[in-house]
Amino acid sequence: MHLYTELLGYLAIAAGFYAITKKEMAGFRFWHLISSFIYVFYGVLIASGPLIISGAVFCIIHAYHLRKLRVFSFRMRRPGGV
Image (cartoon, rainbow, N blue to C red):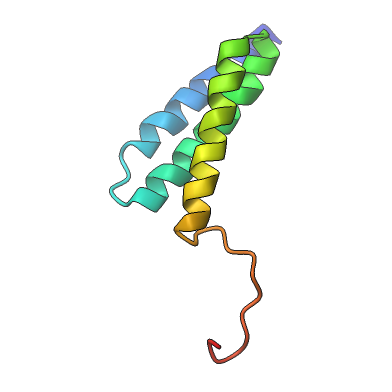
């Protein structure tokens, strides 16, 4: 189990590094959201409060801005763009 926990931490780091390679803001925010979500899960596994809190705050911030950028749009659109 310890090996899988560490691998999850490295996966979060890799997703964070990939996020900073994105030139467009939506791509950066999406990949950093993924990274932050993994950090929250990793923080739960290792019982790290600061990691859980910071990851959750980043998730909320990125989800808010992605929704503002209309990347996450849940509204139904009518045919014809109306």
